[in-house]
Image (cartoon, rainbow, N blue to C red; front, side, top):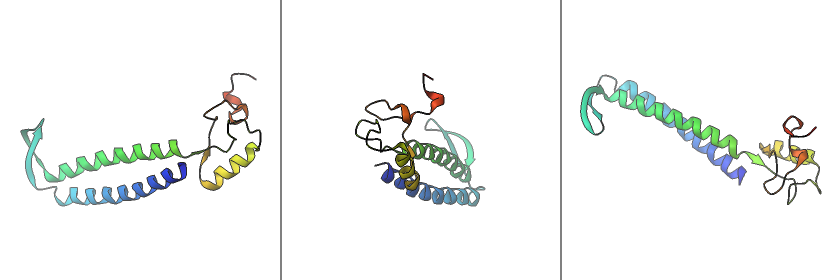
Length: 126
């Protein structure tokens, strides 16, 4: 699932970059076209149509950052066994497999706690 979601976010980010380019070009193309500004659905001070595109650009840039953060949080793999104890597989195998797949090993299993999967600096014991 992590592989599919990571790949999907990559595709979305590519499309989002294209959209950002279009919005930027349109902001410059329409920078001198005056229109009625609105505040809470009511006419307000005049603005330019280019400003509208610039505001959409800024909003989509924030969405791009959110999507990039989401991609990193889902780019996780776990091959530590059914309960996460590494009883049947060495942690190095999980690390190697995750590296090859472009994933980050999960810091701990979802169903149990694995001391070997937690960095020693984060362990509550020596």
